[in-house]
Length: 212
Length: 227
Image (cartoon, chains in turn yellow, purple):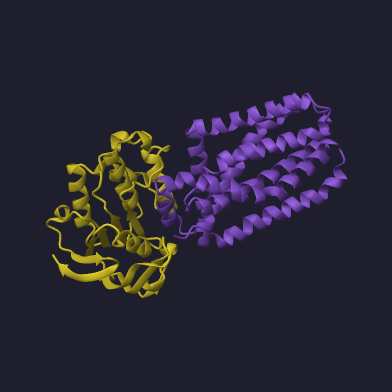
């Protein structure tokens, strides 16, 4: 299978004359796990949102298989510390809604993901009544149902209990062969056992990365 | 159904379902509308204003104020949990999200009108218009609601990304809606007074306004929801 490639070249982002990202360059391909770390306000989430196509860049290039893209990418899974779910809709309605938008709904796949994330017994409950951790688990199912080839996680371990953190770590490991994954996190302990490259951001600038 | 059409339907259905399941939001909107009609109709009973002239004004002022309640929820709900990001990534087209929300808001306004119009009709004691003119009144209601939904959705999309959205929303919305309000009141009055011929100018104005405020944001919505 051909590997997908992400190239970020001299990426800059300025908001109201404040430079949020300065000259960020790196490349990665399917199978890579990139961990983005840095202090609060270093520009981690901005970098992730630009790569997702949710935010415009000020200058530079973000290429997927040597082509620029926007929201039309269609194969990006984005998990943030907010669950990004509709609280008035049930667990299964949320999952089905997003899957149908991606054009890939199948009841079997939905059942499989809900069982994997431990939400099968709660499938008819409104998301609003679920605990924060359970909402994060559903967010994970939402991300995975679209069969993404670029997985972006922004502080994904926030709100998850130990079991949820173990599940997320297993999923990151399982998807290593199928997708390129970029994880924004402060907590490196959650990533123990994974092989990843690290990008450190300091006031919007990229510091030297390391292979772990 | 095309991919675009299917996405439009899915977002529309989701928005409408969410509105129905958070019944307190829809209910509070409708109750506010009923209260406005009742208060206005009592106020007009105490004056010498001709009821057929008062009817359209009462109706549209009630719809206008009530609609701001439901319209400002449109993108605010999406922003609260950042569902807008997940939605945009799945849809891949900001214009499609805009159009679906206009349709969902239009449906809510039509539901609101379905409650308010008969109530205002009874309370203000309007003399029955002929079936032809009642059809024209419905047309005026539909076009006016379309205008409200289109402009409201656009302004909500713009203001939801800014600080002080609750203040900015009505401040930006009201001046833009003045042509819709004038066109809707005058065309509805003409329908009630059974002077159908004089209303067509206003109907065309409403139609043009609706088309402009639907098509232009559809093209430019990429810039509205950017950031």
